[in-house]
Length: 163
Image (cartoon, rainbow, N blue to C red; front, side, top):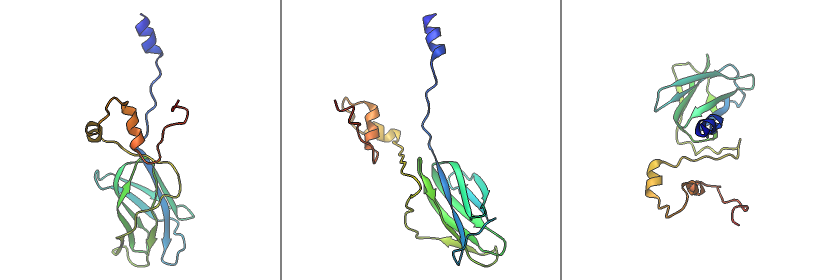
């Protein structure tokens, strides 16, 4: 009976999120913002697509995006389609993707290739996935499995725990 009471009073553990945010601004070839453009985020691994329309400042934002590789397109009548392909989204990131629409027909596509790795300037939060294969291959040698978090960039032991 005591076990049932303890089980019933247990609170569910809060899970860590394995999602991110993809945001950016759509601009024309002169640098002006483009409101009303349709931005589509398509998962390259899943094929699942989500669509947003840019606001009056040309901004768009996709929240709770699963980690993975994505293709992002922007379209508006009178402009050629802008494409950012193979955008890698990581855990907890606020991935900024800037798209530029050039005047032309919608049959034309402007593809961004050879772009440098995008620098995340919107947040200082970081995340990393440690795979099951890494857990098996790394020697724990009596350490706690939670010590694997120390392998992530920017993670350190608290000064309170060093006793």
